[in-house]
Picture (cartoon, rainbow, N blue to C red):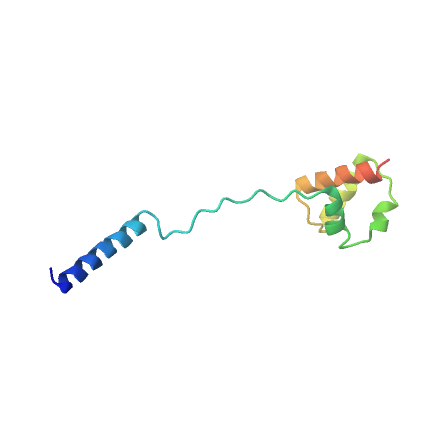
Length: 101
């Protein structure tokens, strides 16, 4: 077999291999599974989300019931505090436990 024919068949086999990889998804990026949302503690939420507008002294001097902390956190959300419903609940539970009546 001449060198030209050998090179031809190497090229054909190579192209077939690349075609097979493309057809089987060899060129696609692996599918990434979204990670679970990070769970943030009430203390972290208080530090990260509440103190951006006011100091901790404002929280520390209060002694609210659960209903009062619920209302206070909801009011802060209306003012622009960025808290999901789950984060607000976590924050309220922390506030009641640490700064409640």
